Length: 153
Image 1 (cartoon, rainbow, N blue to C red):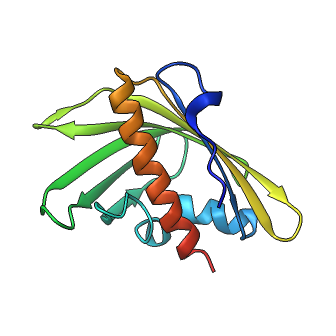
Image 2: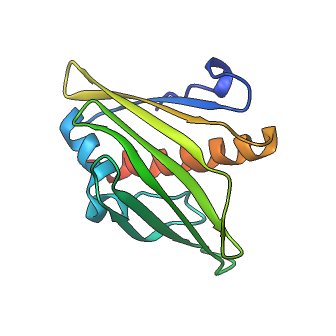
């Protein structure tokens, strides 16, 4: 599975492009159906145990990730800003940190139908407070997308 590095993104932003061997409608549903999202959301070290979504503009989402090795619980949430099935999804993303909401970023995902029942997904997230934070998200999302690829039939 080809992975595009963050080089195409402005500083303190990330961009990842993936090609999935699945129809666009199915990849869209994997992002917007909580029963499917919980199967792949989060990196392998912190798989999701709960994903709740109200997929409409202004609707909220939240997720819980549970550490495999350390048992640490991570929670995050956001609000859907754009929902154009099955082409584009945009939502805010913020970690819950010590009972407070962390820095909010914007995630935008575009889905392109390709020949042979394949889908190109272009994922962007911005802004990050530091290169280290961006790099952590780059690792986390790539790990999650590996899990998504494995979860698609």
